[in-house]
Length: 437
Ligand code: GDP
Ligand code: GDP
Image 1 (tube, rainbow, N blue to C red):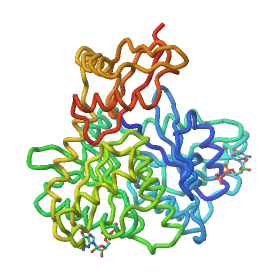
Image 2 (cartoon, protein in one colour):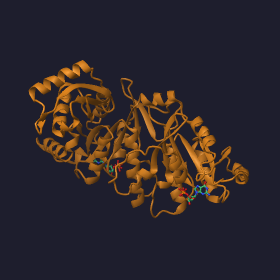
Image 3 (cartoon, protein in one colour):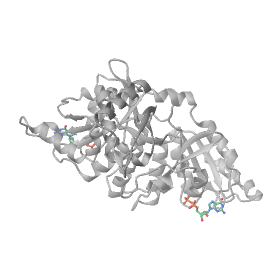
Image 4 (cartoon, rainbow, N blue to C red):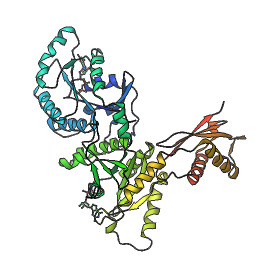
């Protein structure tokens, strides 16, 4: 089940990161080497009354060289697009400012639940000063003190109360969620429009969820439901500057987090670039299903070898993605677009596949018989038993005599044997070694 999302919005210095750090338990793991992305500051996981949720500190979105108000607007926009509930922070020390009023108007229009936190209410007198905040038209203000940890409980009760119910989030979970990721101009928007071609049944809204603003849900002929998560939205709305470009990388990562399957879009004319590799690597590490789309195939002059040559290049550059199918498509001529939803469905089945332990162990013992386990410093690796512990991505535990003896190459071998025996196209999987006591 996906976590509900809480976004913190407010002008600089009201205490967003202070509150964020209070709410943040375990930080959501991140990829460090993506330039301009300080995601560890921006996303975290929180918990209140047994309910876990993701928190976004929109103040941590570092958008350089933008005027103050447009920065705040972008932050509010992220919150409105991604959050189930928005925590709008103000400060009792400055009172209601013009910037607060502007943000309030934006949030009000979004129709999302907004909880109004009035920070820096460090003592009882100040708690009495919060009444002017009713003028923002966002309901009851909650007096809190981030630095003293006061009032947070009441505020969080209100937040949790506005989260979608577990059933609503489950229902969302039935959908196959995917996104298209790629550098600017590879053809993402064109593909989005072509995939959503006129004959698709668009399910306009998903009951009870508040996230459908940027997500389009549609059905295929067989009634399977897909949600396409849009990542191009903001960039298309404003002018493309370097900072909004960096910002769109960050949104892309967030879209990957929320997706089951990632369509990595390449431009056939330009081949594979560094950024493609980073984003694909991120999706792989996150255990997402992956399809590689080579778009603008119409522009390539072809002979009998062209596709094979492309495939070799891609396989060589993306070695860890050997499981990912490659489709050569054109948003312009619609060539092979029809295969995309079908592939997505297959991969969805792969990533949800469960192999019974008895069948799995038959395959494993067979594999070991053919390629005996290695020895290291005179000790032989012994694999006793394997079991699949989860799906999305399929995760297997191997019980062994000593995990240190299980080298990468042997894990690779076992992984390949499992892939040969069962259909796991398009999904990474994990193999974990445990010592059998
Ligand atoms: P942000 O820019 O909104 O993320 O704000 P910060 O969390 O960085 O806080 C700005 C300043 O306000 C820092 O100096 C904090 O120590 C201070 N601050 C945050 N919360 C409180 C509070 O509850 N009371 C007081 N007095 N100061 C606070
Ligand atoms: P995005 O930035 O990734 O969303 O890319 P767009 O969808 O805006 O496309 C960028 C440009 O490439 C536009 O001029 C499109 O018309 C063009 N384009 C997109 N897909 C194709 C394709 O399959 N073939 C050709 N020839 N042009 C395409």
